[in-house]
Length: 209
Image (cartoon, rainbow, N blue to C red; front, side, top):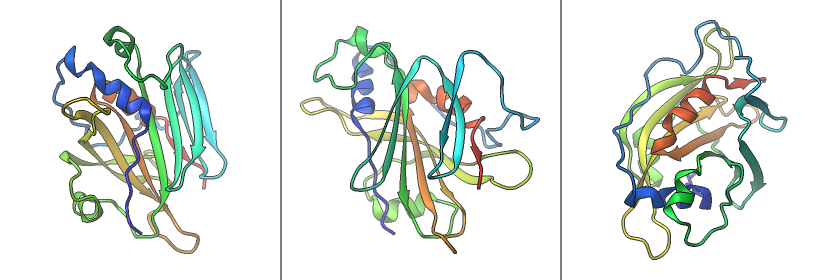
């Protein structure tokens, strides 16, 4: 199935800090995102997100608010810092600097995993895939682990703005085989400054199927 890419306005607004901060080189570790003993961290600063349709869960900081909806290409899950809005045309730099968050885009894939840079570029000819690194998402032992690809990407600038912005990306296919019930491509995206945020969240990711 053809791959589509979907960056919502949360990511576009976050990109406006280009004029106020420099980007650092990002590369995910090539080992599992899991904690060493496979247990979920216990913290009063985290909520748990559960998705009954796609059968996965993870923990996320309580200061992030959740928006979730379907569009014509797949399912979108947005997390952003509470007290800020993603519906801003020209936010001030001081506003944007406080806007942390990430996005998960899930779309039917119906092909065997794992995802590779070559497969991504087959459908998305102009996509930026820098420092591609194979990694894992899911429990460190047992079933339910997904082979993932982390890389530095690039998003389009907001209308009227020059230049793109760097993104931290983790893409994976689950289940790895499309049979018998199909599978999905997961695209986890944040602005590059929030790479550590999604790395820590993916340590807690669990599939329940």
